[in-house]
Length: 255
Length: 249
Image (cartoon, rainbow over all chains, first blue to last red):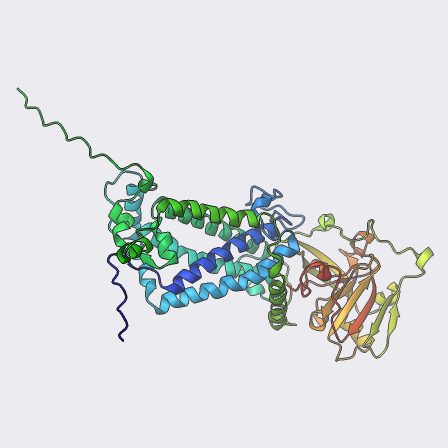
C-alpha cells in the first residue's frame, strides 16, 4: 500500500512557519496582559515626579488610566501578573528572534537602502497619490519597518522594566536610562510605542489584508490575494466592485 | 460536496471574509470584556504563586552586599512631602502611661536576647544614610535616615549564623514583615530613630523603624517593637495579603 501524495495546493503556499505563528499569538496574549497589568500598576501612582519634585515631561500627572484598560484588579494582583508574564514575553521573544535568525527570515525584515523611499511610495499609494501598489517582497516597506522596530521596542521595554525592578542591585542599568524616575518614564513611553504600532498593525490587517489572519493561523496564503495583487488600499476589499469607468469620449476634432 | 470542493472550502479562498471579521471582533470583544478590571482567571493563581517563588530565587541570586543605593546628583529631598503611612485607624503612638517605657526586644536565634531602650540604641554606632525610598506604588523619595546599622545590632546580640530570616514586628496593629538575612545585613539597612536630622516623628514610625533602600517601602516595618532571628520565614502583613514576600529592589 502506498501513501497517497498530499493534494497539491493549487494556489496557496506556506507563508508563516509554525514557530512564527505560535510565538505571534503567545505574544498577543503576553502583550495585552503586560500592558493591562502595567497600567494597573501605574494607577497606584499615575505620575513620574520624585516626591518633593516636579516632572517636566508628562502632561497628565495624577490622572489615572481608565479602569477598562487595566488588568489585575488591584496593585498586588497586577504586580503578580506583570512579574509572571514578563518571563513569557521574554522567553517567547527569544524563541522568535532565535528562529528568525537561524531560519533566515530576518532577511525579510532588516532595513535596506531604498526602504525609506519605498515607505514614502506606500504612503503615496494609500493616500491616492499613486495609482498602483508598489512592488514588494514578503512585506511592504511600512510593514518591514514596523516588524523590525517592534522587537527593538520589546527589548527596550524589557531593559527599562528590569531597570525599575532592580534600581539598587542593577543600578548601572537604571543609570543607563537616566535613573529610576526616567527609566520608569521610558518604560511607559516604550509601552505607548508598542501599543500604537500594534493598534495600527491590527487596523491594517483588517483594513488591507484580512487574508493574512488565516496565514497567521494556518500558515497558508494565496499570493493572488495579496494586497499588491489586489491593489488594496484600506477597506478596498469592502467597497462595492468598481464599475469600469465609461470610455473617455473620443476627442472631438476642432473644426 | 466533492473532494475538490472540500479542499476549496478549507483553503483560505473558501473562508468567508465576513465570518472572519464578525468572528474576529467577537473574540476580541470577549477577551476585552473578560479583562475588564478583573484579577484574571482564578485558575491562574497557582501559576502566579509559582512565578513568585521562582522570581524570589532569581532576586536572591541578584542580591549583592556591595550594591549600594546612590541618590542621583541634583535630586531634592522629599522633606514634608514624604507620605505618612500606617495600617491602624489613627497614627500609632506609644503611650508610656499605658504600656510603660518603649524598648526594642531582639530575640530568637541569638546568643544574648536583649531589650534596647531608645537611649540604648542611640549609644550604639550611628550612621546617617541619604538614600531613596522605593514605594511599591512606583514613587520614590529622598530622605536621610539616622540609626543603628542592623548588622551592628546583630553583632551585639550575637546572632546565630544559622539564622536565615528576620521578623520585624510593630505596635501598628499586627503589622510585621519578615526578611531574608542577606538583605537585613546589607550595610544600608538601619534601625532608624532619626529622619532628616530630627528625631523620628509618629507619622513616620517613631520611636524606631526599620529602614533600607534594598527593599520596597512596605517591607520596612515602622513602630518597631520586636526583632526575631528565625530559621524560616513567617510572611508579613502585606506579604500575606497578596504582595510578593521578597519585595527587594
